[in-house]
Length: 263
Image 1 (cartoon, one colour):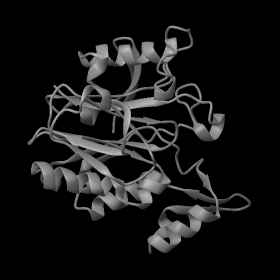
Image 2 (cartoon, rainbow, N blue to C red):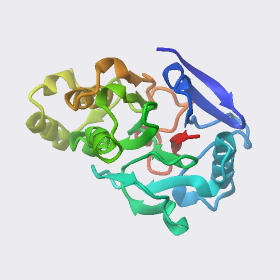
Image 3 (spheres, helix red, strand yellow):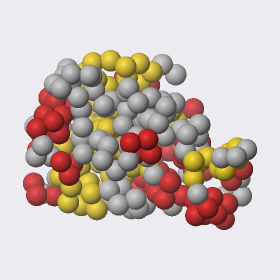
């Protein structure tokens, strides 16, 4: 799969060829931006009134050809609930109010956003029905099957067919770096009979978790063809020049935006 770092107006983004060819669907996976003050990107919604964060959102809106008010950002809570947007949210619900970790819609000119700094951002698109989705999949949401819930929501609410849904994983912490403790290990082992494929034991380092692989497994179980599931393969922890990482930098780190919109 072709992945490249490129410019999208004033944004530095990860370009993924599979999503470039989906007709009326636009997307972005942001990086942390360039080295100069005006190139840095941070989408941490809690700091929206900070100059850098506000500038980043304005740049994202410009890249989609919409207003900042057209960007839908939820209050992510590491759950498994997915919101079906049949109608446009009220103005006061568009930014950081609705507690949800996944959203799907067939509405045009509304940018669906997830914010991450290690968790897996999952973008979904069905070009036949014009349905799109965005999912925030940390380990808790992944174990609870949020990606599969989003697929079911696309099918049930909008008539999508699973074989028509294309799914892309953006940059996230990879199995090379994602060390996990006893709580995670025990939860994964209890939940998945095939846990050995996704819990990688290393001598002297305990276990590392393959969130990419686990989400792919759950999506295949949900009926999405494996050939429709694409991963950027980029690890946020391994690439400090490109991405923020909660594990590497702590709670004070910034956030990347992953977003999708039907034109």
